[in-house]
Image 1: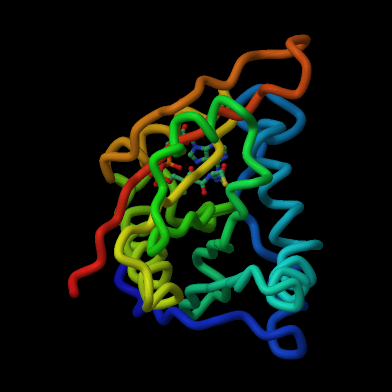
Image 2: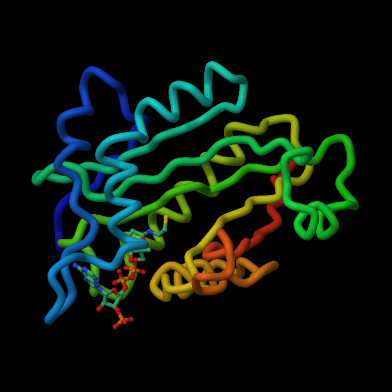
Length: 195
Ligand SMILES: CC(C)(COP(=O)(O)OP(=O)(O)OC[C@H]1O[C@@H](n2cnc3c(N)ncnc32)[C@H](O)[C@@H]1OP(=O)(O)O)[C@@H](O)C(=O)NCCC(=O)NCCS
C-alpha cells in the first residue's frame, strides 16, 4: 500500500459520517459475522468514539480520538484518555501502588486499522501505536512518568501480538466467559518522557 497517511484529531462535524463507514473487521472464512471482540471495536468507532472523546474532555480526562486518512477514507484510528487510579480494580491498583506525584496513567482505549491494511505485517498498526505513544506524551507535558494501560480481550491475538511488539507487559489475563466480566486483560507500558 503506497497511499500517504495523514494523522489528525477527529472532529464531530467533519468526521462523524466517515467514522460510520470505518471497517476494521469482516467475517472470517466460514463465519457469518466478524469476531465479536473486533465487531465491538468497530461499533465503538462507528457509533460512540466521537461522543466519548468529547465527554471525556468535558470531564477533564483529556480524551483523544485520532484518525489516519488515506485516499479511501479512514485508514486507522485510536483513542486514549487519562485514568483516575482511584477507579482501578484492586489487582491493578496494587501493581501501580508505587505511583508518585508526577506520574500519570493513561489508557490506550481502542485502536484499529481498516481491513485493507490488515494481514500486511502490522505496518500501519505499528505506526498507530507509535503515534499514540507520542500523542500520549504530548498530552501529559508535566509528567515524569506515564503508565500507559490497555485492555485486551482474551481472544484478541492480533492485538496482543501488536502490544508485545511495543514491550507492553501483561499485568492480568482475560478469561473466557462465564467467569464474570473478565474477558479483558490489562497490559502496561511505562513511558518516561525525555526531559
Ligand atoms: C489490532 C490490530 C490493529 C492489529 O493489526 P496488525 O498488527 O496489522 O495485525 P492483523 O490485523 O494483520 O492480524 C492478523 C490476524 O487478523 C486476521 N484478519 C486479517 N484480516 C481480517 C479481517 N478482515 N477480519 C477478521 N480477521 C482478519 C488474520 O487472519 C490474522 O489472524 P491469525 O493470526 O489468527 O491468522 C488489527 O488486528 C485490528 O484493527 N483489529 C480490529 C480492531 C481491534 O480488535 N483492535 C484491538 C482492540 S481495541
